[in-house]
Length: 319
Image (cartoon, rainbow, N blue to C red; front, top):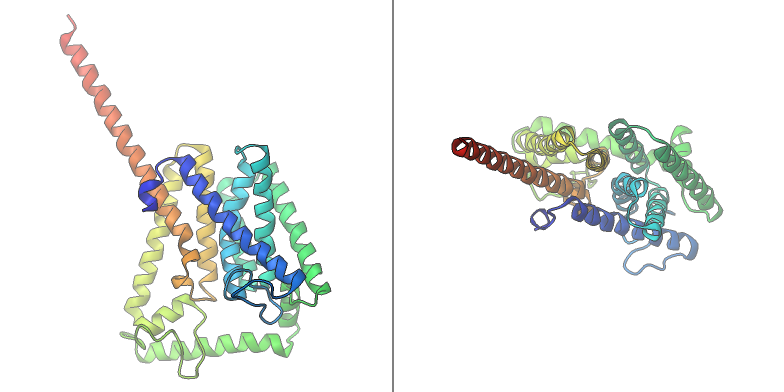
């Protein structure tokens, strides 16, 4: 429905603004949890990590990391008016707060990866340097604030892993063990896997926290190939839209969506985000952009044919 309704770039941008604002609201809820405790109905703080309106800290980190770069692009671009443009920077602030308060290392890596892709595609500018500096300052502030409230921070988790602290390495080691167990099962049952609907839960009772390996475990090699083809197709469609656009401002927006898609792909290596609705938002915008470009090409061809027919008519009727 959205692909049909969003027919202009302004409409697409408004939809992206509403999406990033929703991610910022989730980050604001996480900040409320940090200051006031479990005040958000239907969710709770887990292991010293905030969840916001999400069901798990990793979900908070994922939805924030995926929405961050489009929010940066909106803030840098401006054009909504002074008040709304200022609010766009507030949106960026709350989204990076969501990333930090989730204490998800993968969310941090997804954020860095998406920012790199966006910078590579849209090029570096003074406004983007200011935006990145703004984000870094907020990240450091939140990290120090978490320590004051005895919440678990990304910095603490990174230090714990590098120093081989038991409670942190236990999480890493359990991931590696489940990956090994799932891979062994795939090697033994390469065609059918364990069957769809198993929830990627191994015989040991642990879940496979990896979209690619979980798909191979449930659906075998054929299911894995289907996943690769599907996600490659979406990515290729986005790259094609970026390469063929002739409007500079529109091209930067597409670069932001591709960066968001990159964050989704990075996060897929530590979580089965295929069934999370927020993970498909970049794909939705890629489809909207592709449909928008298709309509523009059809209109251009129609206008060209009409102009050609008009010139031919004039030539036939001229003395």
